[in-house]
Length: 114
Image (tube, rainbow, N blue to C red; front, top):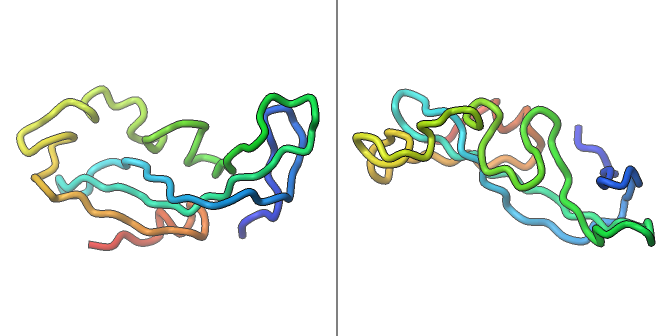
């Protein structure tokens, strides 16, 4: 279940949604095919007048960190960005599969669309 609030880096909790956007994270390859997880995430307004962050994006525990483009499983993989036999990450050209999730990381790992 998605929380109705998020916590800014200053520690202030906010329920003021500023907007939404699609975030793409590269995940580990499945059967030699690259996987990209697409999540709808919300941007919140920070109500703390002393905070330098006017808006901030929600983070999904165990899956996202600020500005990350990879899941934790691939973040340490040195070869993830190096072109392999079929392209980046060793996937065949045009062979990336995208998962469209909006319910949080449980939905993102629960099914992958081919």
